[in-house]
Amino acid sequence: MAFDAIETPFGKVDQIVGGSGTYVAYAASNFINDIKQISIIGYDFPQEELAALTKLGVSLEGVEVVADKKSFFWSGRYHLDMNNRDTLVTDLNVLADFNPAVPDSYQGAAFLMLGNLSPAIQLSVIKQLKERPKLIAMDTMNFWMDIAMDELKVVLKEIDVLIINDGEARQLSGEFSLVKAAKKILDMGPKFLVIKKGEHGALLFHGNQVFFAPALPLEEVFDPTGAGDTFAGGFIGYLAKTGDISFENMKTAIIVGSALASFCVEKFGPNRMKEITKEDIDMRLAEFVQLVNFDIKLV
Amino acid sequence: MAFDAIETPFGKVDQIVGGSGTYVAYAASNFINDIKQISIIGYDFPQEELAALTKLGVSLEGVEVVADKKSFFWSGRYHLDMNNRDTLVTDLNVLADFNPAVPDSYQGAAFLMLGNLSPAIQLSVIKQLKERPKLIAMDTMNFWMDIAMDELKVVLKEIDVLIINDGEARQLSGEFSLVKAAKKILDMGPKFLVIKKGEHGALLFHGNQVFFAPALPLEEVFDPTGAGDTFAGGFIGYLAKTGDISFENMKTAIIVGSALASFCVEKFGPNRMKEITKEDIDMRLAEFVQLVNFDIKLV
Image (tube, rainbow over all chains, first blue to last red; front, side, top):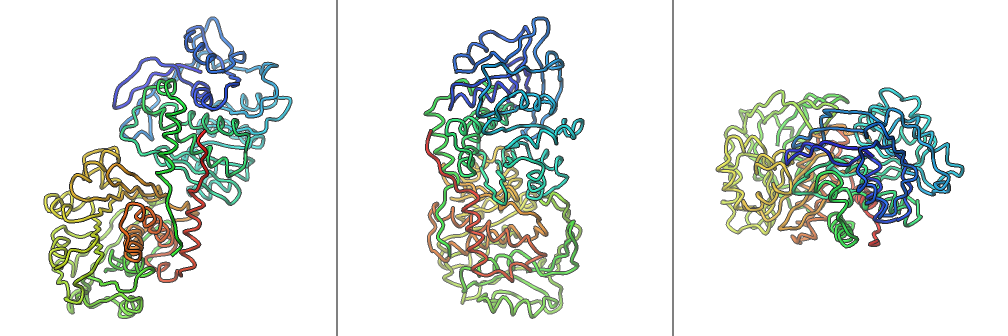
């Protein structure tokens, strides 16, 4: 949970709440209302933002508040091709000392989503859970591959679903072909691999099976910040609601994640995620069905 | 119909038959056997290549053979990212004088596929047909947008389906967003627009409707030469076989085109297209169904 400053071709915002946990919670709250958040924030994090999450059923007992430090801050700029961005500022602030303690009331969680953070912290959270969750999903990024690959590989052996983008999959595996990359990564531990390709959709790999979910073609991507985390939150939220972790149900979960991500990019930060209703989501899911549905008679 | 020299990270070939018409004919011949080819070749075009096409039901009456000139020659190099390529040599040879005369026996053709060539030649073929085909599809490229945009816009008013790639759609429309680009291009004349995105699949636009077909995730793209023409050939071949030019049937036609293109890239030039059977195609179409099929219960 953090602050972002964002500049896109369509406008800029100097300070808006963000952070992986914020987006995951907003997205998952469309499906479940007993989300247990783990994060760290500073004295500057707005009370009304915390209240908004609490109202959605997000427990904040695991969110440490540091009285004399600022929240993590990231500033970035997007260009017309929204698949790439420049990082302008990264102020770790409270995140420099983050050593999460999982509250007792969080024990027994069936679904664990590990946002992008150091592999050591991700592993610490897994180890603190007395009962292994039914499903552990995680995100990571090239930065950890550069500086903590050995630790990352240890965490990969503990999880079920890895969610990364195409560039990260290539770096992690050393393979350019995403199909070859997926094979290598699935050998590193995860039983499922989701490769996100931004506006080009997402692939789900499991054993020799593969599923493809498109991104919804949009007139305008206003701000892609948080879209990946929103995707992950929709994915795990849907799985948690249905309790079904089969490959077949994960296909649907990926469509759900894509649908939620398509909302996220419509406004700055998590603003759009705060507005959407069940009816909005159902309508968009129907658009996805139309987008990929075809009738094949083998010829 | 032409010669290509191709270099990819996986190997090279100094001379292999190619050209838009060759790929379209091979792909469409999987569905129909009364293809009427229009092209121009030199004295050097191999007789056995012509015989192979004739055997598939491709009429070559409209293929002009120039006795004292060489066939068109293109040489290019691909890198690991197969979405881009460097053109090393372009020798127009016979193509410099191409002024096609549509044979009488070609009159009454119901489906016309115009490969990438100057808009003036494409228009000439349309005008020579006494009865307007049921469906006219065409390909073009950035080169013609650079040097013959006005003529291109005239042809666009005469056709039903435009098949171009994402970069070309952006150039033609002046819009970065493919959704906005599609709206502008559909206003220029075509009733249907196919935007090819290489390994990222293809989009079909018609009015306010949109359909997305993924590319099959492949371990290796050995040689992408001709994949776009193969896609177009499979697309129009399937439409010609079924005789149904509805948006719904075009969705299937695009999946068929994608399936055929996924074969094309497996070997140099059209080599793989010469081998595949109906069973191969049916199996691959079943893979596409698996790739995108999901069960949605609105949540």
